[in-house]
Image (cartoon, rainbow, N blue to C red; front, top):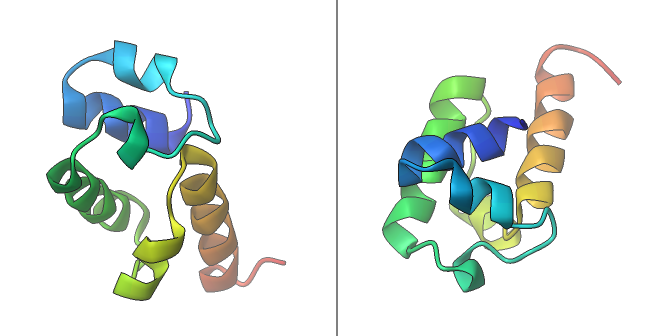
Length: 81
């Protein structure tokens, strides 16, 4: 299970939501509320050490968006390619 899916399970308290949402489905349109989206951003920052700005949040709509963002930022901060 991906990092974002694991965090969604933690947020929603159930694996069903995370299992049913496709990687390219808009999370807001899939039924997750704005409060949970804010909590998701905070959890991502806490667990990965990757900072997410307000501008970044506007671009992060799907699980795939979050996963790509984390991968790109993590490789930048660790000196990877």
